[in-house]
Length: 562
Image (spheres, rainbow, N blue to C red):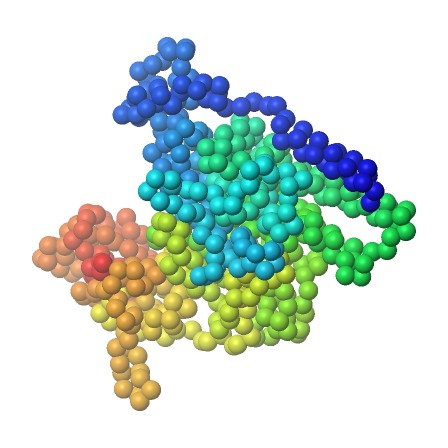
């Protein structure tokens, strides 16, 4: 390419970027009122409704917007942790839908390559770059942030490029940027986009993020057209000069180099204020844009409704290699679909080299079925447990340099179902992510447990036969130690047949009238059981209404361990 042609192409691209990034539009009212934070601080002892009622006639204050911040600030501090800063602005609904600190930072650590040249980084384990560095004085510090803003002229070849097509409040974009990525943030709502840009500035992330106001899919399509036009111009100029493309850099490889490293999409599941579950009913409908996604990125991560069935999710996304349920402190937070576009995927990518077959069946070259994975985090975003149905496999690295730890595959035959038997001394209630991904048996095998009923998820340390044929008591090495099991542990007092009159009398005689009632696989609801047994909610004990291994209705009386 001639020097003049190169300069012209770069100038046009920069001009397009600047016009998209600096397009004028509505902004949040508080951005025009720098004194709002002082007003809020003076009335922080009031809740939102009290503030609005006390100052209904103040025209010199944006009363409604300050009231919204009074509502959001304690929630943002609890949900976002170190990603919250005084002076940040929130919208109530956007904050409710935003990712929490733990999930967002864990996700960024596991999908962003932060060291070395692209294609050679690791993203998990001891070699991973920390997402944030903090001390008592400084809090979050974006690492390796350049002095100049993120634009097409300053992109090094080794950077990790992410596009968040459904930016919202900007929490995910912030987490990706803090993990070392260069991020394109897209948001249709101009007011919300102005808030995200303001908040990113308070986190000192402006050098790593570009903001685009408009539909994310339209931005992606526009980016693809620009890249295609630029590539065509380069090819024409090269042919005019008589240059031959080097064998080491064929056209398809050059096209691959321009792809995004990760595309992140969190479709809105409340279009028109109505909650929906399926991808087809969400906005955007990702299933309608799979061709565009394949041409634009090496990997796509889609956040799904936690209520969605993981099998249905994988069926809707033919490029899906893994479905991951993520819980934080025992609460299911999100469901993720990890997709590696099939276009350009070579045999062995996302698998061990040369494996190239479905787990336990199939022929070389076939795509493996999606792995089901459950990940349990603590409030800081540290991973405490991980289970998957890919037994015996180790992490691999795909061509984009992302450790394919969730797309692990194994050709080993899967073991049979876990045995069931009568309750032992302990009852184990697995984490909700294990229930979601149908991985109860994986946890049971790891901890040497059995099911109380073949079709119900409660586990116990029952009597199992030893190799010699004599029964031995099994279970986790130290089940009473908090955090030793991925879920809740209870010490069993009694296992009683479900006979309401006798059971009610026994509870009264033993003074267990204020209890927590749980039920799985039982014909009565929790509310019906409280009424039948004449109990109230309280801390005297935990009652588990379930079915025994021989199909009888039972109630297990237990106390929480740890």
